[in-house]
Image (cartoon, rainbow, N blue to C red; front, side):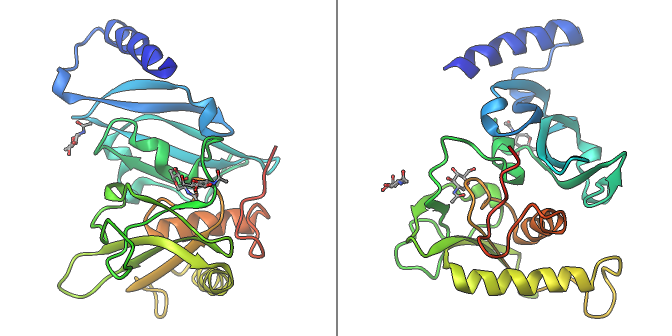
Length: 251
Ligand SMILES: *[C@@H]1O[C@H](CO)[C@@H](O)[C@H](O)[C@H]1NC(C)=O
Ligand SMILES: *[C@@H]1O[C@H](CO)[C@@H](O)[C@H](O)[C@H]1NC(C)=O
Ligand SMILES: *[C@@H]1O[C@H](CO)[C@@H](O)[C@H](O)[C@H]1NC(C)=O
């Protein structure tokens, strides 16, 4: 309730400060995070113009190797993947994830694996056409997967992306055995290391199948290759462990 009230106040503020009215149907509300440690620090929703802006979330590795999040409204042209600079150090900071969304209000609270203290860590997204117990099938867009499932104690969350020529990309989410996941992530990081700086060349082209796993609350939502790249940046900075598949707490 609190953030809804705050959102209303920020709505009024934005409308009067900007001096221009966003038509109601073009309003999108985005979670605002300013150097937040967890989602709990991002208690306000800010109002953006969905015609020109999207919600974004960024994960930053600071010079002192802590993880911070920034989020809010961002111009649509700056959400283009080609204008983003993942993994590049800029004035001592490194951006390990930068993602945008605009499908729903508050959609950015699920981006870049930002953690919430309310997250039940034994739950993972579950959208898998091949699994008997899945109520939601594979999705065409990560934002469409909204069903959670409770995984077994020896499992962590897994994201998969499959590409078949002539068909669109499909995204699949669920639980996976942690030992299988350790192998998958070790292999994925070796590949990212080999291809660091030579993306698109022989052996480093677009992969038709991608697997990524992680064991943290809130870590399991994204498309697989963004998730792999994000976790690889954390791993290179000793902030993600291949033994636990968990992000080392910075606090
Ligand atoms: C924002 O606009 C997109 C189309 O560009 C639309 O699909 C989406 O539903 C809109 N979001 C909201 C919250 O209205
Ligand atoms: C997580 O949620 C599931 C389903 O709601 C519940 O069965 C399980 O006990 C919860 N686990 C924890 C650690 O809260
Ligand atoms: C997956 O992410 C969602 C949204 O952040 C969260 O509600 C859920 O608990 C997460 N599960 C795990 C295991 O990370």
